[in-house]
Image 1: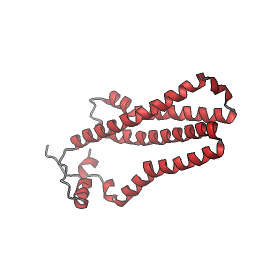
Image 2: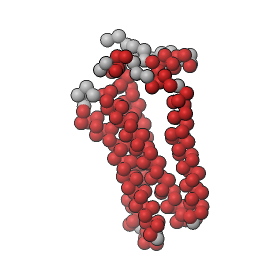
Image 3: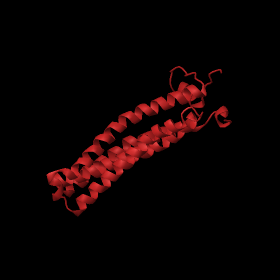
Image 4: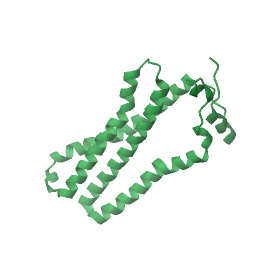
Length: 182
């Protein structure tokens, strides 16, 4: 099969002097899946650390000192961490289930969506955990301020900047004719 040039690659070439990546659809799916798995490895470590911390917290002596609102924040953060763990491990389970079934392109598309949802869940879990811990240590006014600043950073860096960049290059959303024919 002759490698083809995808629409986003033509735009990349026009925008930069970088050489065009010549790859088949299967090679592109393999590359995209590999990149996604690498990204999930990085974020999964952070989620595991947060989740482990939250799981151990009730067994500490000071946990009994939390008031009702703080306990609600704890439970919220724990549930969001569990949700993000499930979402971020979802692509691995999906891949194992459809392995060698010729569904890699669908896997990549599905995994992308649930990875984004997983990032949103882990972001929310981190924000709630920051609110809980800073509220406990320094009081709610400081916690609210720190959490608001973290939320702005998180939303800007994880979602707003990439979405703005994506809108600047609308041709990236096009699919090649051979992909829609599959």
